[in-house]
Amino acid sequence: MTYETIITETRGKVGLIILNRPKALNALNSQILAELVAAVNGFSADAGIGAMVITGSEKAFAAGADIKEMQSISYVDAYSQDFFVGWEEFTRVRKPIIAAVAGYALGGGCELAMMCDFIIAADNAKFGQPEITLGVIPGMGGSQRLTRFVGKSKAMDMCLTGRMMDAAEAERSGLVSRVVPAGELVEEALKAAAKIADFSLPSVMMAKEAVNRAFETTLAEGLRFERRLFHSLFALEDQKEGMAAFAEKRKPNFTNR
Ligand code: HXC
Image (cartoon, rainbow, N blue to C red; front, side):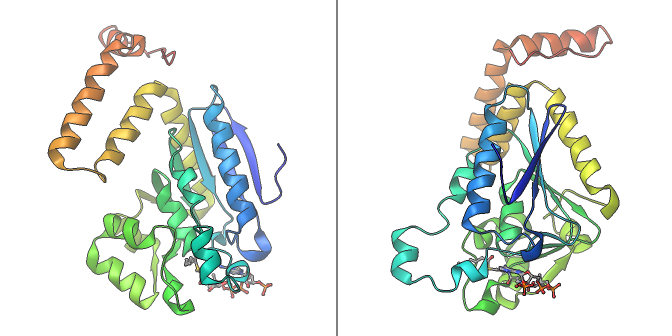
């Protein structure tokens, strides 16, 4: 499939998606949403792919939802179309997705990064939820996901003042998992994704499902869910292979079975 607003590449077992609307700082319009969802679903359906990386440019991961596309929308249209509901499909992807963020990740850009499984930031990254400056509030999950990442006080600060957070503050507050030099961002993210993609895919997918469950349920239910998934992994050939390889002091050869 050919895309106009994103570029996709395959690097070994990793699917790389580059947001590519440079003139609009990768603002997220309906076309980029449709293409992004098609791309992640395509990589998900590809048995040769074990993980994905989404990145933007050095200046902007994404500077938000496309304000020019949104500005004339009416309440009735927003409500009737359930505007932004399309992003829910993105969050249903079951293979891991790493957001590699350089430059601006604002509004919907920050929200897209938070929909990924973890965020690796370049040292020039800037995160923010500036919707309040436009007379609105986050609409792609920012008020909920940012609060779960960084806690109430910082989330309120970001959503009420619209200020940006730099990469160091983002790492300190748990929004990003690591910060790397801007020039090494994509390679570092690809390296992390390649490492994940070399593990047994079903166990990787279950690890993602288990961690995500921590955001949806009580501790007791989450622990039960984790234990049941853990038990089920003993049905895999990859569990036998992984543990045998450890005992035999060799590298495991996982087959995703
Ligand atoms: C549409 C955008 C855009 C956006 C930038 N551009 N952000 N277009 N939607 N979110 C466009 C600009 O209009 C400009 O186009 C070009 O990209 C370059 O941007 P500049 O502003 O000239 O660049 P710079 O001076 O470097 O400033 C960078 C910036 C600024 C600080 C990131 O662009 C900015 O503040 N952008 C808006 C950030 C924002 O408010 N995001 C949240 C959106 S709302 P031209 O044609 O003039 O060259 C959202 C969720 C909404 O995401 C949920 C509620 C419903």
